[in-house]
Image (cartoon, rainbow, N blue to C red; front, side, top):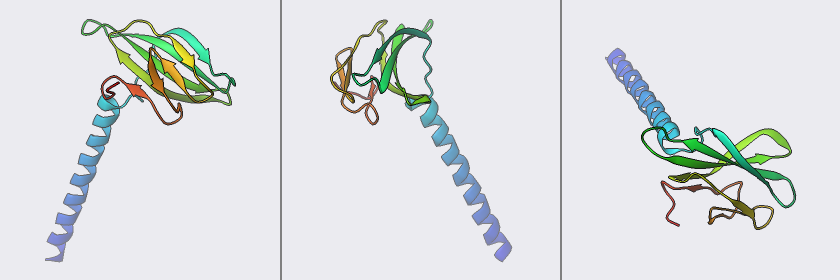
Length: 126
């Protein structure tokens, strides 16, 4: 009797782990901007204090969609740091303007805190 209960618990635990792993993969590859890599570097915009740089990339959507623009935040103090803060579809150019050391506007979209906030055309309403 105990053996059957242990087997049911083990099967349930493995099933839950598989479903959780699948959901994490689906989120990462279909809903998060973290997996998107820049293709063609168009321009770089250093922050006023030069602590950060926003790199603007143009990505080709291939036969299915037009171009997209990716904005990547880099830290001067950490060369390995890269955070996607801007993702817009159906556009082939972008301009960025820093308002202060933490706030940037890319193509008219304000990103108030570059370390926490981002713009993703799929979810943003502005």
